[in-house]
Length: 136
Image (cartoon, rainbow, N blue to C red; front, side):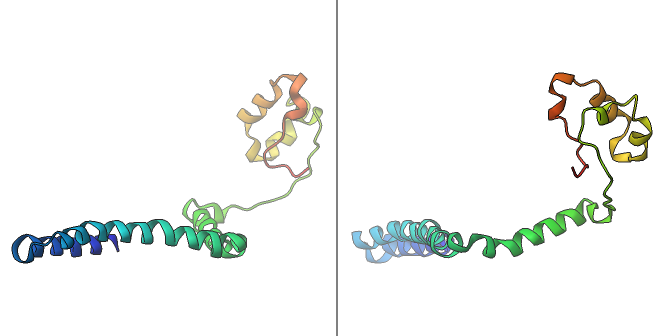
C-alpha cells in the first residue's frame, strides 16, 4: 500500500513540476504516503491486534502455533523419534553413576558424558538436578 502511495505521489509531483504548478498538489503528494503509512502500518494492525486477536488470542493463534510446531518437528526429523517412558527415581542416589551404571547405560539419552557430569556435580545442590527425559 505504501509503495502504491509513493508511486501516486511521484506521479502527482511530476504533474505538478511540468504542468499545473500548484503548491496544493505538492502538499498532497507529500502527505499521501505519510497518511497511508500511518493508517495502513500503524493504526490498522494495532486495531486488529487489540480488538480481534488479543481478546481471543489462544483460539486465534493455536492453528498457527500447531502448524509451526508440526513442521519444525518434521524439519529437524523429530517426528521420527520414539518417545518412551521409563521409571525414574527423583532422588540424589539415582544420579550416582557408580551405583546405577546399568540404568544409565540402558537409556541412550543419558549417555556417558551426561551421566559423568551429573555424578560429579556438587551434592549440596543435587536436589536441583533433574534428568531431562524423566517423568517424575
